[in-house]
Amino acid sequence: MIDLRDRAIAIVAAQTENAEEARAELLTRYKTVSPERADIIVALGGDGFMLETLHRYLDRNVPIYGMNRGTVGFLMNNFDLENLTDRIARAQKAELHPLHMRATSMTGVTSDALAINEVSLLRETRQAAKLRLFVDGIQRVDELICDGALVATPAGSTAYNLSAHGPILPIGAGILALTPISAFRPRRWRGALLPDKAEVRFEILEAQKRPVSAVADYTEVRDVAEVTIRQDRYVTMHLLFDPEHNLEERILKEQFQP
Image (cartoon, rainbow, N blue to C red):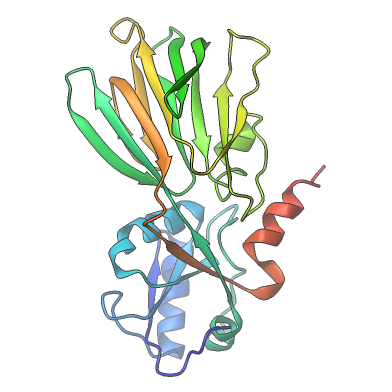
C-alpha cells in the first residue's frame, strides 16, 4: 500500500485525442504538479506510451501509475475519472529491472540503451541474418540463420516474445527468454530460458552482406557487428497496479488464454 499523504501527482498523456481529453478532464478534478516535481506520475495512453514514460522519467525514480487510453494496455490500469487518489493509495508496486544493450556497429561505434520489454535483433534486408550466440562467454549456437532473435524480460514476455512463439515468464521467476525469430537453421531450436544474471552476446556473421539492426524497446542501432545483453540490476523502475489487476496476475492469466 502507498501512503498518498503529502504526495504530489503529475499527469502526462500520449499525443492522441483520447489521452489528451482524459488528461484535461483529470486536471479539472485533481491537484497536480509538473512531472519534474511529482512523487507519482499518472500516464494516460497505451503500452507504448508507458514505456516512453518510464524511459523519460527514469532519473526521477518515481512510481508510474498508468491508465489505458490506448489499445491493449497490458501495462496499464483501467481508465476511470473517479477516485484516482484512492486507487493510487491502494495500488501495488511492481519493480522491474531493464535489460542493458550494448551494440557495436560495423564501423566500431558503441551504443548503449535500456529495454523494459526486450532487446531484438532483426534482419534489415531480404536475406536472412546469420548470428553466432554466446551465453556467459560460452558459444551455444555456431550459426543461427533466422529473421532475428530477442531476449525478453518477464514484463516483456507477453509482447513481441509471445508473438515469436516464446514462453510467458512469471514476474519474479528470475529468468529471461531467449527466442529466435523465424529460425531456418537450426530448424528445431526454439530458444532457451536463461537465469536473469546471464550475459547474452550475438556476433553477426557476414554483416556486410546480411545487415542486422538491434532494438532496445524503441532505440534502434543499425548495421551492428556485435550485441551484448544483460539485465541491469542497478536500475529499478516502479509501476503501480490496482490490486485486482496486478502485473503478476495479468502475466499468469495470459498463460491460460485460448
